[in-house]
Image 1 (tube, rainbow, N blue to C red):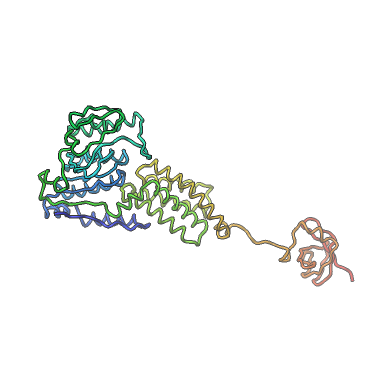
Image 2 (cartoon, rainbow, N blue to C red):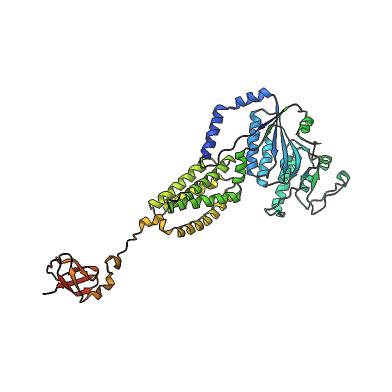
Length: 459
């Protein structure tokens, strides 16, 4: 009997973290391990079938840990890892291998297609290896992001040692594992598989070759045949598949996607603060940060402390905009924001590089957006933009010398200061000490700097 367990993913929104925590709490309260064990007892001993059909990275590691936890809680009798992967990150492969090696549930690796590179290492840490006809195992050399071989002696030595140690745990020939990593290893295998492993080659074995060399215990067409070979035919097979949330998280924690989310998050929040009223940048920023933390939370890297640090950082930056603190709040806010992002990631150094790139790109986007919306910025509230122009009846100080000798009409009493209309301009003037009523003709007798002195014209 086959049981497919699939769980719905959480919605990718800014509240996804809270929803995930709520669901986890409810599961802990209402679906205890004892209840799960009781449910497993109803169907009898079971085999858990777990796929390894994606790149070996942190998302796969989180999925396998979750799947094994379910198997342990259900008291599974055996785990069959169905492997078909071209490899991935060495650091994650190492942690996955050690996790499988130390797990109390017996594990059989069923190579369904290709167990290449990191996939080979995972298979070697299982209790048994069974291969499908036409499948291959090996080619575990360390390569860079471009697929080129890394010939650093320390790196090659480390990975060769890891592969050899894993092979030796099950009594396999360590030199064959070394030949799968190091192109300099030479092996005479003609009498066993009809060919030798020459210098410069990376060893890859077919299903039949692996069985002849002890790198596979059996050849089977499917999982049912594997179970039959294990003597577990007739057992319930529970297939565990990645959830929608786990698939989404695997994509969201990709370094490129992660950097883009940080760019949009930083730029969106800052633009919304500097140019309020749009709404869209703020929504995009919140969604981007929500997706960032959602992905890392589901992948098992982000905890609530990361979210709290991030929220404190944003709050301090917002306060700095309205309550200047000579940069103290800004520095503390930036440090908290960066700490929240870095502690949420699986690799702090990768996260730090991503946030530095994001900050530079976000600054460029912010500058462009601000220049396109000069008249709507928050800075307009702190800038005096009223102008005393000539068109409004005002005259600048540097033109008052030209008023000397001109005549005008008082529009307010001069006691001794007041206002005179000269032409179309209203001029603030003073007398030499005498009082002059309104609607009297006066003439400018002195104009120095801001002082304009007039006297009444005698009739």
